[in-house]
Length: 570
Image 1 (cartoon, rainbow, N blue to C red):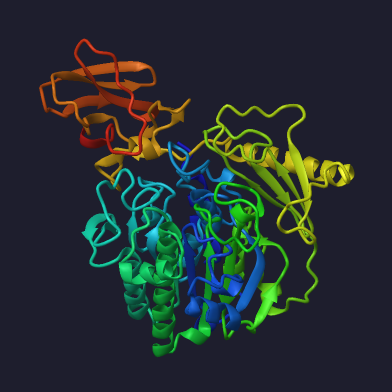
Image 2: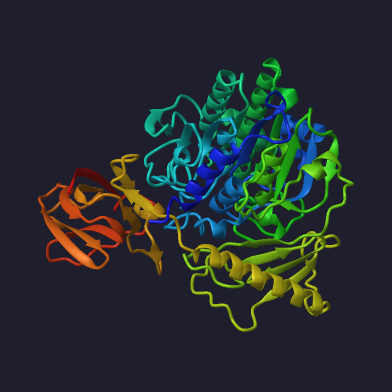
């Protein structure tokens, strides 16, 4: 199993080079906070021209800090998170999209948390991880020493059903934890407690909030003022959730001030993609899942009073892949030789927006299905021009890239709303961007051949393992086909399955790389014991009632979820 190749490399580098800061003394290293919100688009902040939303703390933070007017992320959440954590295009990491087997980052990816942790930083995550819920893909496996998270793509989604944004059931360092209060408040409280307890050493706080993602659940005191302005219920609740985020940002900044930490704390705030619902977008076209500007341009603000001057705006293009190299640069930590990043450090621009900065290319693509296809829902960005490929094909699994794909060209400087397609007027520019896209697609495919991360079963680090059917099973043609797994130890395994509404006599089936095993189940029985061999395999488990065909479950619920526990080793 090649899972530890990159992590072994990192360990070797840590021993030989220490992975310690090379440009700064220990006492001058900044603390680092990254705040990521979920489905908060570019227009969902007062500072970006929205005259309805109330975000005074965020607006002040942006105005006193550095504002990126053209900062980009992937069009949906898990891809953005993979790039943010690694500084690499997410296709290189094993992440393909957001669910149905597509949101599992390989455990051997080297993360920002690992690099900072090995350089002496205390590391903590508080919120939404969404890069794998099983070993070796969990945040505690990827460099975070303190973890308070929900599972999968959102609170109340499989596998954590039922759940609520109020008093949610979360996971604290791998154990179920019942939080008090509203989820955003709880995550922020935990982050502040972590900061207070680690203030005598440099810390890295990753605060990836799950709001304002659906379900739109927020106390009426937050959304009623927006309804009073005449906004519809959906927009009022989204804005209410963002106002709550703004209150929590205010609390966090105030606490940093009280602790005397604000001056030497580098803080990044950004959204993960465009808005899910229709609302104000500052004139940008498209929403979440689209590669038009409204789907990928997000609010991004940064402050580090001791490190760079505020009150400025940066108009150069930048993206999620730049965050990790920027933070490593700010902390004086060299990227280990042999660790290939796609992003660039933005520190030269943060220190001086007039610094020489060559034009660059940014690439974006995302769509449903586990096999990325050329030109499907893609974009190439330069400082001025943008190629859009296969627009509107995010959900079209049957999309085939034709010899003559649909390609559009926009001058974003002159036409930020992408209303005037220049493909016919400037075929030479389009041809150049298409050639660069082709090279990029081949390159990211070569890294892992678009193979998602693999769940390890029978590990001493996680036993039992919970296999979520909707989130982690590999879906083909809209149906789950099983879980790609690595069975670490041959032995006896107890399999427990969520049977949903089935309660009659049945059989549990286990298929391992085409070999099928069966055990009888009495009515209401849901577990059986099987012998599993060591090694890589495609594992499928299901319950089939006697004399009836298999029922394949596809919805975002827990029916078909399986817990596998290693009982003994052969």
